Every structure is written in structure tokens, then in C-alpha cells.
Image 1 (cartoon, rainbow, N blue to C red):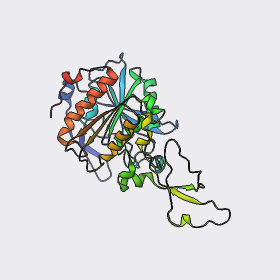
Image 2 (image 1 turned 90 degrees about the vertical axis):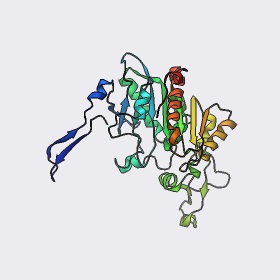
Image 3 (image 1 turned 180 degrees about the vertical axis):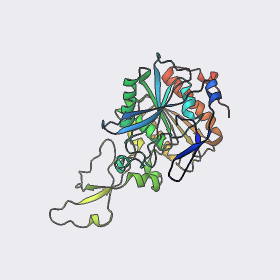
Image 4 (image 1 turned 45 degrees about the vertical axis):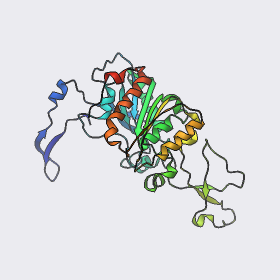
Length: 336
């Protein structure tokens, strides 16, 4: 991501026979463009290395303090960290408003690292990555004086929207993250699909509790069902077990909302049904919580022609709540 694209010729053994072509970035640099930076931090376990990218404003001043915004995606089939060069992207655009924008990995992410790394998020599709995001940003604030750890935002789409909303409601992350923009989030995975939500959440075998002992943990209902041979009578001394299949939902934590949250969803989203967001909206209203909501008429999962409008709305939302800038919309206009 921090290297100009190039083509080289290699033989069958991989020996570099010569450079064929390399991208010329001269005019980009002349226009004030800057390459993103990469960094490495430790996960919350203090051992696992996490890799990330950082975009700064082109007029960056190291003597200033900048709010930091993380683009997030939980995976776990992939990880929300870019690996390829791009001369322009949404992270770079957002940074120009006056932010440090980052992506950073988390345990439970990409399966290409290791089985242990990938499996960390199993049985929890809501907030398993938030601890590492928080710790990573805190490390960056210790390393760089220009990172303002008291003004932190995050945003994400689809699974990233799910993760963003959770960050604004799950303690202690709802104290750390001050602003969130959650788009097309699958907030209730009980009504999402089976190849993502059921596959990566999995089935947890738990001890059977006697009637009246089925207690809630952390505001989550513990749904227990009978499946297969596990429900046959156990031999003497064996504990009876069943499968816990409950996938935690964000709306169960609506009463914990803190900070400023913007929810966005396409009216006819054909991937994440709009009911995912509307159920969360219903819970927030019942909890008497203030939030912002945009439903885009006729838009599917990617927002299509309304994407430029959404991008600007995201800039303005962060500018208003992290910079105190209420005039950004009058100064900047998105053009297709």
C-alpha cells in the first residue's frame, strides 16, 4: 500500500531478471499528494503483532493534535486492512478534512495468518475486535504526540457497520469511541444469512441449567435448543450439555449508547436486510437515546448513485462532532 506499482520479469526460480515498468507518481507529489504510512502495534494480549495503515492530511503539522478515526471491519473471513496501492480512496479523502485515519488488524480476523488468530472471534460476532482496536489507538497516541486519544471515531460498512454500532454501546468502548458512522450494518445476526453469521459464530456446547437457572449474561438472552445426540440421557457422572446458538445482537445494548451515532441503510438492501437497522432504531427509541438516521431510497447494499452524498455526510458528521466544524458542507462539495 505504500509502494508505487511496478512490474518485474522473473524466471521459473523467482530470480528477478529486470524491471519492466514502474508507475510514475511525480505529478501526484507535485499536487501535494502523500503516500500512506504503515505501522505495527501489539494486540491487547501484549504478544500478537497487529499491522495497520495510516493516512494523514496533506497539510499535516506534527505540532498539532488530530482526532483519529478508524475504518473497521470485523471479518472474520477477511480483515479490514488494505494491502494494495491506490492513488485515491475514501480513507485518504476523510483525512483531508483534518483527521488521522487508520486501519488496523485484530485477533479473530483474516484466516491467512494462523488458525489461532482466526478462531479468536468464534462464538462472538459482535465485539471481539474492539479490544484490539482500542489498545492499538492507545499505543499510537503514546508513540505519536499528534494523535489525540480523547477524540476518537470509527466507521464501517456491513459487518463494519455492525462493529461500529457495537463500539458505541459495549462498555468500556462506548466511553472510548466518541463518534460512529454505521452503514448497512447486520446488527441482528439472527435475521442475517447462514454462510456468514452462523458459520463464524458457531455452536457452543454448554452445560444444561435446571429450570429457573437460565440467567442472562451482559443483557444477552441465553437461547438453548435441543440438537442431536447431545440430548440423550447421559451416563452416571456425565454432565448433560446442549448447544447455545444465540448470536448477540446490538439492540440488546441500546440503552448503553454514548456519543454520537449515525445509522445509514439502503431501503432495498439485498444483502443485509434493512430490518437489521430498523430493529436497532426501535430499541434506541425505546431506550430514549438520541441518534441520527439516514435511509437511502432505492439503494441496495452499496448505495449506488447516493454514495457521493453518503461520503460527504460522513465527513460532515465527523467534522461536526470531532472538530466542532458545522460549516464543512458549505465549504466542500462531493462531485461524482
